[in-house]
Image (tube, rainbow, N blue to C red; front, side, top):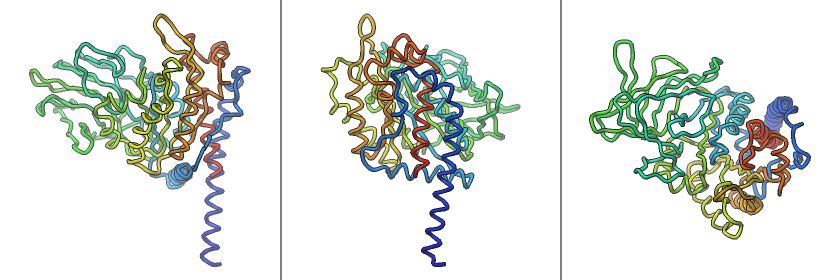
Length: 422
């Protein structure tokens, strides 16, 4: 048999294996979500739950191949980064996506943590985290009468001058031991080189090593664990700014990163986060980016929303991503049908169709994909029926836990269905 025939036969065999792998994943997710899909209101259009490619889709070929290679070799990582506003910070959406990825494929690391309770904002209940000492934690998207610390890839920052400051966390508060780590990266900075994070051992302390390559402090542990308490040695008059924690195991699998802050628009990340691009380049090398930004950008009267300005803002973010990885798959999900905050209450947001148009044009420009949440919901005024079905909160802006998990399942199914055919 000629080498050409052998190569052709191997290519067919690999394509069949890939299709079978994704078919098994799709069947598993479909079985899990059948009951929830029955809760869809009559206006919903599950038939529109598919990836739309206005132009080329070669980056999704690359993504499918990398997932297949990881599963087959039981090695390597696929990195997914989900960026947005409150839909991402609220965690039900990204956590369900993380669950779908890490139970359907191999499970990598948990990615970023932050003690959000310090900022009096909603927290992620899938891990536990607590602090001691006094901390100042202004939100990136809100004004403050005090000087704000520098923000980075997490969108959060808390500053302390307390001698008794500490942060402790447990990745598996449910006891299932799904995540472990053998090193931890402390994202943040001290006001002087004489102040630093440390951990206590039986008869000594372990000082974190500053890593110039990632501009972070790193602990390499003696043994894998899922729990750690970090303290801070602060000289008199010094402070420490905590931007987050990144537990690392180094094991193969899908790493699902999520960056979400209530109220964030595209420019909140690109303009307000001083260390955003630095952290992105140092800490994330994404194979797939899920864009959940648009709901806050569009929270203006219809006559004040500019499609061209929205796209220009997005281009800065997309160019940053593609500079790091030109083969990264880009997935936009459109806004949900919703209301927006106005002085004295809520008002219907009339810009969802314009955001959808802008995302389709961006996907055409950058060879990305769009998952049309707005269309899947049933488009204009569908929010009322989703609220009646218990899938949208009374603010008619944010989903309930069931609603977030439903749209996460639908988007994941649409993604896997597309990858299966590659």
